[in-house]
Length: 71
Image 1 (cartoon, rainbow, N blue to C red):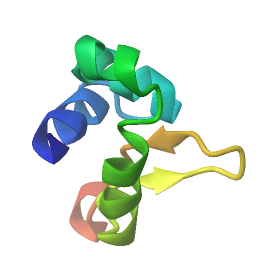
Image 2 (cartoon, rainbow, N blue to C red):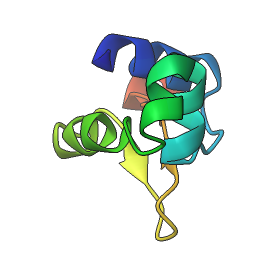
Image 3 (cartoon, rainbow, N blue to C red):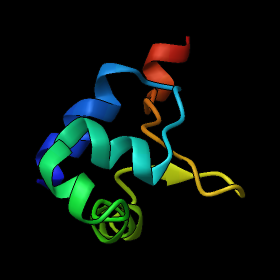
């Protein structure tokens, strides 16, 4: 499920998503049972530094640019 979350966030780089929105988009059935189902997975991705979060708890995939791309 982590890969599905990464794909969702990568499709819209720079767009912020709440944990509930991610859960709803990834697995509606599981979301209906537990609206916070994606939160532990998002936290794991955050700890691996694959995504980032803002102070309000919204998650975003940040595109990493190399120094070569900036020149």
